[in-house]
Image 1 (cartoon, rainbow, N blue to C red):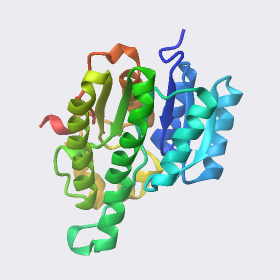
Image 2 (cartoon, rainbow, N blue to C red):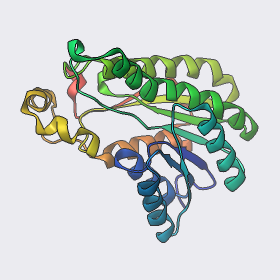
Image 3 (tube, rainbow, N blue to C red):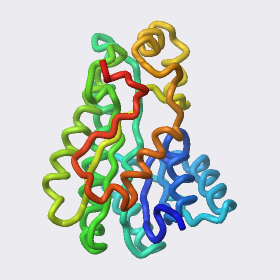
Length: 250
């Protein structure tokens, strides 16, 4: 028996990295998965892998800052699977641009993809979760949403917004059995962090401050997200699940 049997989950940014690993793990644990991403070709490959392993999934091309795209994702998920129980707001960008080099357009882009998308997804999915009698919304923030890392400016601002939006949403929807939690990964080895980890200027202080002697893997985050999506976390809302190898412990 899977930990997510009978649950229907939407996972954004599922074409690669953490999102792809989450989508595969959710399907393995019995969830029906609506995997979304703007990279349709890579997304289709992830969904094909899920189906080949015996899981259930659909791929939906998705610009997470588009209201119309969000409506389409919700509609296609309900059409395919009948309901929505879980939303993982995973899509994001992680530029490492210093403040004085950040343009206004760059700032807006980061805030839109990392924070506005979470607002849109939450707003769109709540009506369907009400119909289902409750649900779990999991917002992927970052350790940079809790402490400053010195590697960027717009990125931690956007992830800090996700952190407090999560708490506000948890308070607003708790009486309807809709749980909202945030996950705060540390340095995770994915395509998104490849350039940062290859640059000693950024990676050396991160490595020195991470207590455990390795970088995190996407699976480390996915299992935390799985817990929050499952009924095992039925008394957890408004929380911050930190998965950072000890970075924020000191």
